[in-house]
Length: 314
Image (tube, rainbow, N blue to C red; front, side, top):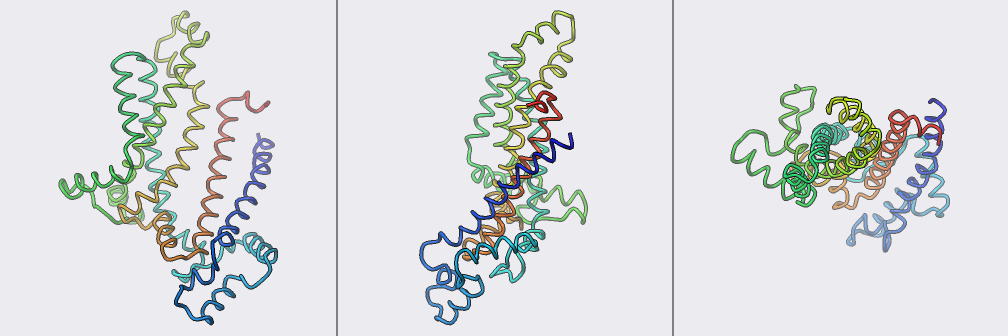
């Protein structure tokens, strides 16, 4: 098992290097002079030259790339032009908000999505199956920002159950923290629940048609043990794959939700950085998020080996 984990880490290294180079190229591929774009069209030549030196744009391309990679190796992701702090510290400050949102939405998504998908598969071609799949289709079809606005109007403005904006750290109490993040997380999870329930239904239908399921039923095993233990366990590979994708989507989808609910997370910071043309902050944040997605996929690969021993021998 340790060897498998080590191999997976080594396989992820080239991906991380490529992501680092792509993040560097983000600034180089901008149309026009990045120094002029960042400093502004009305900036003086001296101010533009200062930005160019600050970003190292006055140096040869390969030297810029080498410095960029060496800085990354030392944990230096650059400095924000609008926040006047390092990108890493800016991300670390806002990481709890985005992680809270993503983690809570996933905690809603997995049990509900797997349960609905399993129920739909078990009662296939019945009204229960049709009801669950229609609801799932609605979940993946309705735009998140539209549901978010409706949620704010209904639960915050009309009913007053939860605040419409702001984030309370969990260090100030689990109750206030949950109240501040529950509605955004629930709205973020609606698309994911629809997606996961459809994936689970497909996986369960495939497994429920296998010979060993018919054998288990012929032996007199209860439906609970047949479906819950044998069928669901063998459908786990596909469900783990979907969960990894959904966790990445939750972090990416937090951009819209954080904007609607004014949550001070990474997604909202990226939007503000783009609007302010703070490209070093955009570069660094995209790079850190890229690392995060690689780690999520790496974790999913490792979970494969735990869920299905056959994968270890491939």
